[in-house]
Amino acid sequence: MSEAFYRNEYLQSLLYYIESNISADIDTGLLSSVGYVSRDKLYSDFYSLSGHSVKEYVRKRRLSNALALIKTSDINLADIAFQCGYSSYLTLWRAVKQTLGLSPSEYKGGGTYYFFPPFIGEPLQSVTVSKKTIPSALRILFYKSRLADIENMAVNAFLQAKPDYSGQIFGRNGKQEGNKFCYELYLTDAAINHHILSSYGFKITNKTDRFAATFAISTVQNSEPKISAAWDYLYSVWLQNSMFEYTGEPYFEEYILKNGKPIKLKLYLPIRERGGDTKITLIDNPELRFITAKAKGPTAEKIASQMIFNHLKAHFPHVINSSKEIYMRKEMNTCVCGVKVNPGLQVKEDKNTACVSTDQRHYLILESSVMGEYDRYADMLSAFANDNGMNVDIKELFAVYDASESFRRVKLKMYCPVKIRTK
Image (cartoon, rainbow, N blue to C red; front, side):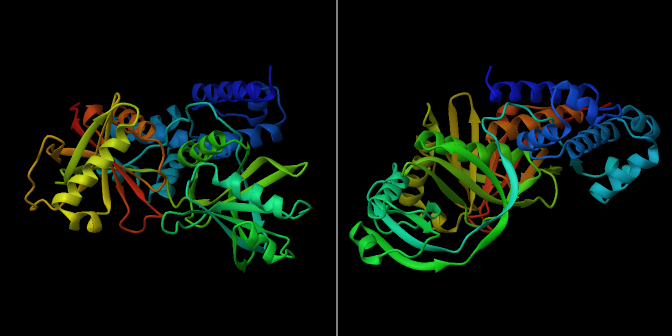
């Protein structure tokens, strides 16, 4: 049995144990015995899995359970505190106030909801969080007419030009120029003959400053599919479930060499602690309207996006430049994509497009600055609705990706029409 397999197995057992004993006084010494590991090993592995310390994870799960009872039941605060593992009603009152800025009674009667779901799914790779410094480096640019494998082409070309190089090599995608894609290399040993680099197709630019940040770091084998999957996991899964968010600053890939060849990459994603947890609120009909297109199959999202782009280009070119809010709805192997439009815009539908408007009385909105998996957020919102006394049709749920602030810092809003169940 591999170490990675065993690690995943004991962490899943650990999460099950926490959920089964969430209202009890959970002893971290006892937790380490669940996986037969040291306490330090437990802390490190759990943080790598969830992006939370054990203590923080337990605290948020308890509070989430308690707030669901406060919102949907008539149980008094003292009994809720006892059921959810708080030492007294006053301890619970303080926890609610410190987290939400509301008293429990204000929370019960208001339209704001707090929800911290249990972590689900097995980790695909190990992630560590650490403060690191990307050293000052010489930045050089490599251009190719195709994007596939451009990273390895750039690194291999550089190692041909400088086979005895002993410094660190960092890289990341650069800005496309015309029909040429770009990959940037950052070289910590800048004492390199620029003429030789130019002869291998590199454009020399500038020397960069040191860049210090807190990074989510993960190491992966040097294989394009594995690298792509690793970035997707890091950003869309791990980050989504963690207590961190992407800062929007440059990410980096560091190349680990063996016998002069890149065998592994270390991924660096700059992060910071989130200002708050994923926010869920209940609102009246937001009166939104979208032009949409639908497609089926494994590439449905890509096809639907292209269909709506072609429609807008032909009939409403100004919408392409002005719209910063993108619509998406998924069900089975179907995807519907669209853009938000002004309610007064006169739209003529055709066989490929349709207008969609919100038409229900109440909607739950989940807001997040982390672009995680659609299905994960949909499941989270559906589970939250059920926990809080609401009926939901998950097929009517949709997401809006809002780039009003910046396309580098897209925000997610997921809308779910609900019916409030009466007691």
